[in-house]
Length: 395
Length: 145
Ligand SMILES: [Zn+2]
Image 1 (spheres, helix red, strand yellow):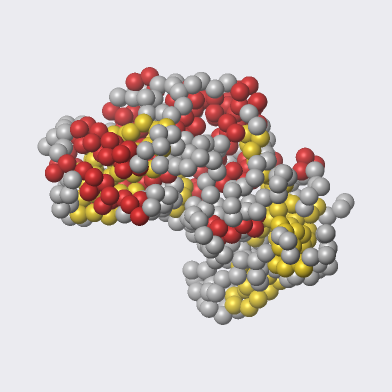
Image 2: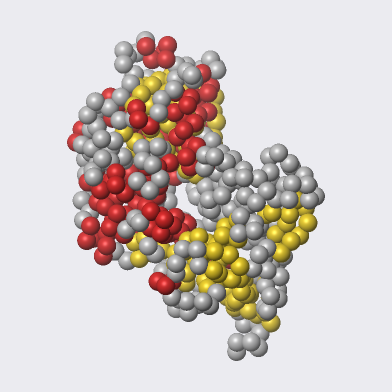
């Protein structure tokens, strides 16, 4: 069983469309996390930054960018990128360093400033980059992939547009009580159903927006944490798994799946393997969970995640939603933070924000969105180009 | 005027420019027989890793795995018509290759009539055009019942 590290402090800059530098959001989140941990910036030995690819060179070296902004101290540094799973990569680098005994105190920071509208590929002619080509040859925006998954779910499991809309209704209610959420307004079924179709069967309010925001966590060794608090939240496991060949589900930004004609598809599909690896490392199972934060890039994808993380069997996610099990007060609340539906996506900050939410929930500090008595939570995410992300936190 | 312009592939070497019998062009590993589309220069089977791959045409027909559409113009480098005309995108399972391949659906097909598993076939069609040329890409079209 893997040893854990302590989540001693967490902090966020509220999500929104603030239009300022990502560095500001990252520094604000970092200072909040340090204050929450009761740690001085000068005591941080290692800084892990989650990179942003839409903010020039400082974004590619985010660890150093945040360290410089907080004031050079000679701390060691790393900068990582894994698309939507960037935050988990940064967390894992810091965690591994602590577990290796190379440091006791690490700060992990991710922040983004995003443009309006569809995510577009980076500029320039790049006819060998599949992310450029999928826009050029297919116009395959991210919602196109989400639409394919959603339609597949409707055709194979009988999901309805109303089911998808109810995910938004649920998450928007959860987000009402989250001061860091961008959207704090209860959305009704009628409002979702009246919003324009973007990529059938998904409507505008089924698809998450892009946001500015920042999140940070202070990770420490368990020994260090015991000297500061009696009851720190433990980051019990991190999964950054990649797919196994052949990957037979079409993935952003690809044109085709791998072929399963010569080598059979693996027993456990990629998305099912993401949380499973974390459960195995920590010696727990989905039945032990009190809550989950899942990556609801679309409402329909939240339903897929119920099955991928093992809280529902294939085809049974809609039932879990319909009977209220995944709403606050239900058996296994999903996205008590309000999820991407309430936040919008600030890519390199998002997995770190998921760990902030797990930590607040496990401490009992989540206020109006508290999952009563929460002891174990999972946060899952997937970054394009094969980045799995699962964080398992316990108290 | 349509038809008067030179028709050129929008991407080199991804499909056979044969309007009557178009095929996607992939590669197959000579060692483990795994197929790839788009082409690879080495085999990605972790138990193989050979670099000896031969070009092969993929099956022209497959079964509809899922579908969706674009109601709003995608950002560049997509070249959108003005005014924009929404279009469908299909994911089609090639049964021999056990591989799902994406493509736009030709204009004029009512996606509301689509059924999971229905037969689809590859055709060539214009992706966009400029003053001199029409740029051609593969698209999916339902096989008439
Ligand atoms: Zn091979």
